[in-house]
Amino acid sequence: MRYMVMLAVVGLLVVGCETNKGMEKEERIDTRKADGGQIGSADLTAATEKVVESIANVPAIHQAGERVVIVMDQVTNETLSDPSANFQIYLARIRALLNQSGQTKNLMFVETRVKSEQIKQREGYPAAATARTLPRYALTAAFYDLPRGRSNYYLLTFQLFDLTNDAIVWENSYEVKL
Image 1 (cartoon, rainbow, N blue to C red):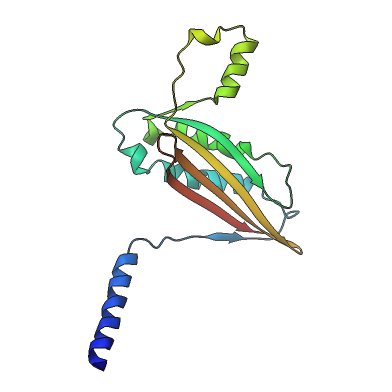
Image 2 (spheres, rainbow, N blue to C red):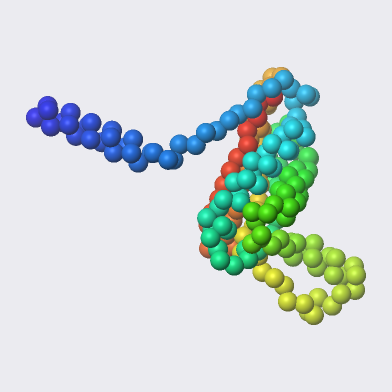
């Protein structure tokens, strides 16, 4: 009986190891001296380049067979150390890099409805005269931090949200400890 129990436990361990194969992902938390305790331009560059490389390989986009339309949503600032900071520059840089990338020829970006309507109104363009290209996905982000004494840990998360079924089809993050 003891032999059967041990065999069952070993079998479960082997199955568990096989199930987790390929799911492990290397995550890197950058640690460096604090420059005033805030994330900076090096983080902007590193985070956005990581995100662009990852988005270019999302199966829903890569295998779509048609042009994928994305609207850049907003960055939600949940940081405790700088709650009034505007982190929209991250999404702006991601969009610019994706537009410059040869890997993502099948991507098209549209402006948010609010911004588009503001521009049309300002320019005197009749709103009903155009058909809006509806986005399939929204790229959004949320930034968090955990300040402790003279150090701070930041977590920047990015999600690609499918507007047709509310599913998050892709997510990535960037972490740094200052």
